[in-house]
Image 1 (cartoon, rainbow, N blue to C red):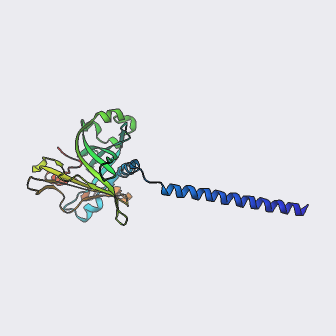
Image 2 (cartoon, one colour):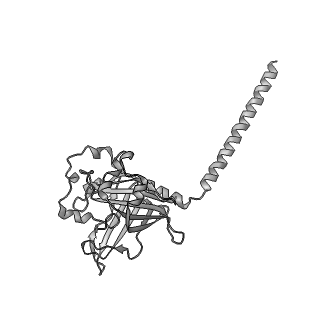
Image 3 (cartoon, rainbow, N blue to C red):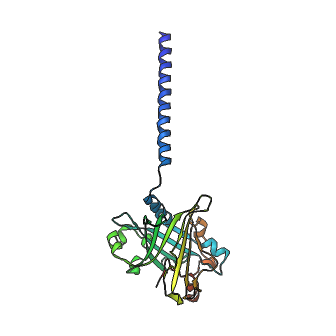
Length: 265
């Protein structure tokens, strides 16, 4: 009787061990299959949409170089989806101290690059028909925002398009890109055309660099020192209410931060 019980126990242990090995083999095969699965064009577009979404600030950069950069809040959130799967994001920028008064508002359209282009994601900026109606869109409850069908109807003229490519291994960025050669027409502050660059970084930062040029190729607006660096804000940022960096500059200096990718009057 005792011998039979031991035999049953050994048999059960062997069966259990075999089951565990089988599960491990199946799990390993599924993992390898998943790792080998190529990233689709839409995977790239969805990742870029997710990376752009949320609140990011240029506070660190403004602290390092207050003469050339301001503490700005960049806020982006999903607004609608087109029938082809393209994402429409609402975007606004405001000075940190007055987030309820955005000085830039745009729609972003995110979709895969056309197959004939050597890029992964196409990111386009569009004007909004009634910007006042969309102020603080992302901060409002969903039932108090314009609904997706209204959003689609309020997409106005096309402003710029940036073509993003996945960054090579070893670089700090995940995706980077720029407007096509020659940029896009722009008449603000004496410009005849503008260019935009954007990088999505591995540490969840977004770097943007917008510049305007006249007919002779001279830069007439935009940062000369380098791109704006927007980072997810640490908690301490919200406690520093009286930092001079959080006060908007006088109107004469605001001209320095205007950018083609998000603003084209």
